[in-house]
Length: 231
Ligand SMILES: Nc1ncnc2c1ncn2[C@@H]1O[C@H](COP(=O)(O)OP(=O)(O)O)[C@@H](O)[C@H]1O
Ligand SMILES: [Mg+2]
Image (tube, rainbow, N blue to C red):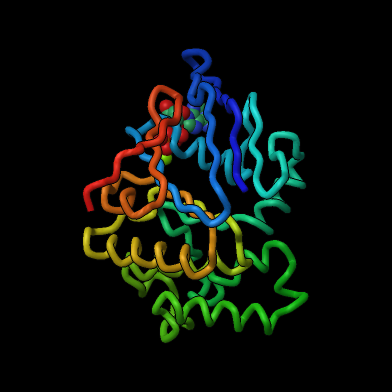
């Protein structure tokens, strides 16, 4: 369902070109979960953005669900993201002036689907809020939630349009350990429940070990860890 072949990406900087990804190969089956670890600045977010169609590679192919993202224009990429991908970031990126429910509905508003099927989407949003343990907070502003609750709301938002691919970039990076564990459990749960392909970039050994496949990004190359982690 997901395949990267010899993907390269550089950024132009004042000091000259910065080669970040130098030939990434990756294959994941539909429904698998994977972690990507590596030091700060090694290109983890860059890689995740290419997989999610937020950016395009300089060279190589990024195949998701039978489509090569590297050949798509901006409009096709936006459509691809709406239909197939859910994102969760380190910061929750909830809009402070919108209620929790409105925030969960935002992806549908942004792509026009909220107008087409408002009641079905409202129901879906409430079900997701229930699933992440926030049904009774739907009408509140995000500012009144704890960090962990905000991240749970962000997970619900990412799932609204039923993505087949859930991408999480350091989703527990701003949470204390106990809260992080609850978000890790939630990601694990939604992965199993919805049969999503889940890719998590993380510094958390705990979270990385929970994924079915584990990769390390280093020197612009991705390698798979084959040893069983200590659980
Ligand atoms: N838009 C950009 N322009 C120039 N350099 C960038 C840009 N985005 C990221 N970088 C640089 O590319 C490298 C990889 O960044 P990133 O993918 O964010 O790493 P990570 O997520 O592993 O911390 C870093 O050195 C970063 O400074
Ligand atoms: Mg990053």
